[in-house]
Image 1: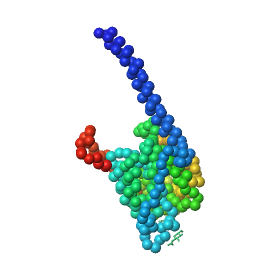
Image 2: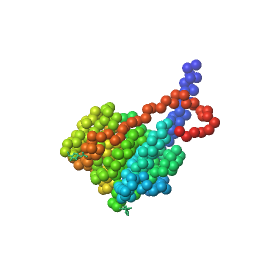
Image 3: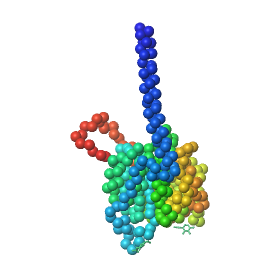
Image 4: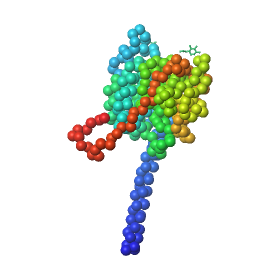
Length: 317
Ligand SMILES: *[C@@H]1O[C@H](CO)[C@@H](O)[C@H](O)[C@H]1NC(C)=O
Ligand SMILES: *[C@@H]1O[C@H](CO)[C@@H](O)[C@H](O)[C@H]1NC(C)=O
């Protein structure tokens, strides 16, 4: 009895090993490709990648949404960088954002998907959004998708690379990192539009508090009101600052760090490369107004979702 077990075991053993090796090679190949595209994106050379970059301008003139009298085409363009990934609430979140962004004059949405290619859902969504947009994608290598690791690093860096490859000293603009789980007041965009180098403002519902904010004295940032890691050089959320496009272009090496980066330190690591605390420009009435909220959507309950398709039609959600 025992000997039969052992013979079977030893016959099976090589096959099990072969299967393990094949699976391993497969995942390695995948991650080599992803690493390559990651480094290309760090070079800011988007054209070398097999990624389709598409920029469209909405057919209706962007000037129509500005208030009468002001000359919208002379305003700096707001480039909002939104990393996004496929999940149950994705389209709902993007819809909420688009409904806000559509009301902002001179706005350009850079949407970066965490995927190997453009997904149909996001492609269709953007094409119908009526917004001026650029659709990019870069897949986050699986080894970086662990809890405790910073998120959306590759996506934000790809967007910065796109700006460096497609905009020049002639272009007036302000760059803002607009995550898809926040709520944005329209007033925020008019505050950030006058950013000369790097501007900052409070963020609501973040860091375990009702709000976090830069502390301002005589028009200068002197510290941070925060409930979390107050010793960060820039104790600020991703939604709490904007950068003039020319600062992004004149600091071509400024990127979000993957190596050695800790969650919650991304903002500080990035801002350290382009500015100093004393040079920050406080917005929103010297940082006393909350115009953006880290709302986050409640985790959806899909407990009753059938394992196999039961409806007679396929419905995109
Ligand atoms: C708006 O500003 C642009 C650029 O400064 C200028 O070329 C254009 O003539 C202005 N339009 C109006 C209506 O003032
Ligand atoms: C911010 O504070 C400075 C210095 O106290 C003051 O001159 C300025 O008017 C304030 N700005 C606003 C928008 O309240």
